[in-house]
Amino acid sequence: MKQDVRSPRYSLRLPPGVIGQRSKQVAMFATPVALRVCSDSSTYSLRRPERKADCPHFAKAENLGDQLQGSLPYFRIHKILVAPDEWEEWLDVTCRSHGWRHSESPLVWRELLDRGGKGMLVGGLADFLEHCHEYYGVMSDMSTDMMLKIAVETREMEEIWREEKKLQASLRQPLNVWISGALNPTCSILIPHLLSEHIFPWASTLFGISLHLLHWEGEEEALHALHVETEWLGLPLLHQVTAHAGLEEAFRDADLVILLDEEEDAEKEEGGVRAEKKDEEVRDEEGREKEEKVEEERGEVKEKEEEEQEEEVEEMTDEEAEEARRRKSLLQRISARYRRYGRLIGERASRRRGGGVRVMVAGDAHLNLKCALLAESAPSLDPGLFVAVATPLETAASARIALKLGRRTTDVSGVIVWGNPSGTFGVDLQRARVFDHTGAIQGPRSFSRPVLEVLHDRTWLKTDLPELLKGRGAASASDAGGARPASVSVAHGILAVLEVWNGVPHPEAEGRVFSLGVCCQGHPYVPDGVVCSVPVTLSEGRWSPVLEGVDMGDELEETLMLAVDELRQEKEEGCSDL
View 1 (cartoon, rainbow, N blue to C red):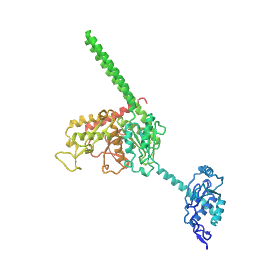
View 2 (view 1 turned 180 degrees about the vertical axis):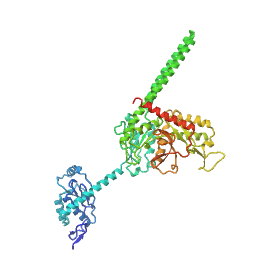
View 3 (view 1 turned 120 degrees about the vertical axis):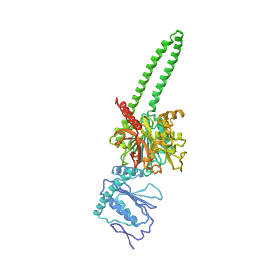
View 4 (view 1 turned 90 degrees about the horizontal axis):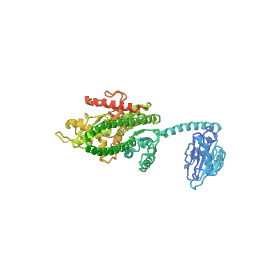
């Protein structure tokens, strides 16, 4: 009795008893499509080069393999793609590894999967047909026209499949995060918290996060140590980490760029020069004191004092000139460096995430200037993608106010910083509120009162608070022996902004107002194109200025204009010799 095996186009007749025979395994591979049929005993593999997209030999062998799979219950088919430019190399490697000699298309072999072994070469199409006839008693009656038609359809499906594979590969690319100024202490604090689903909830659906550590002209040994230490953390989202001491690959395919202060080394060098000069001045002063004693004995005290006064005036003038020279030199280095950074970001950064790359400038020095230079040097990118993080200053103001009121830092919210966070700024308490305040009016934990209603010391608010905030970095560094603990607040500010900017669900995130240095356009209090810290909200990857409920008083408006003039002056000094 004969049994019919169903096929989309053909009817294959098998001799009696074939269905009940021991299950077999057949594999057929082609350049556009590879057919792999698997069972517990053997494998047949067929491959053909893609350049023969209408190859009738492969179409006929493929059809025969499909029919065998339909007739035997343990046959499995798996298709594998081989690019046309890889076919010759693949064929050579395969034949060498198995000790075969074969040059035509297709290539067919049999593997004994349950017994191991390198496989047995069957040969080309004719050998495969003969093998199927002798082993299974099966023959194919496909016509030449049908073989050509199937070959064309295979080619079309292969092109569709290849495009889908490219699309899937593009969606599986890792998120590229670049940190410039990687040797800044803030970076070491930032990394473990940055590479988490709490900050990037969608990163797990990609291929993780590729972290790129950049410190231009930084010490390669220190960068390598940071590289190794980051790998040893074993962070789940970390795809790979790379270290860069040059700009050859800087900001390539960047989705997020965080720029930290890089001027510490230069400042230390200049600080060393100033220290040496100070020592010389001390030694000179000691020498002058000895001379004074001699002159006093000679009755020339009055004349010497006049000479010292004249020298002191000249010395102060020289110090001021030297300070101006150092400031101008620093601004020129910053301008040259960040203009170059901006050009590289504009040329190399990723465009895949709708709005494009996001750039954050954080630290202590010249934040508005750096952000402005980056945005101006990358005209192909939306200026709204560049922000200067003023959140550390905002948090410091909240902490000082909380300390003044005898509360915790978290009990004070809504403090806004206007202007230049690393220069001239103003603290706005119009929206500031204090929770859990002990006073005549009290309520539950969620009850709050305006700070301006419970803090009556206006002199402290106008004079002492700004001075305390301006000296916060020096004071905290002094308390910690110069270890720059401000790095903790900078890292916290970056994470707080990123969490909301990335749309992470959070009960306190909705409607939260941040102080960010942004490139203002159409702002009622800031000229167009000027980077200035203003109150903003973050939603769906974009920031929006907060204008409702803002009452800009004369004093705050004057402070804001001073900050704008300060930025313009910094740009002029920094670009004077460029």
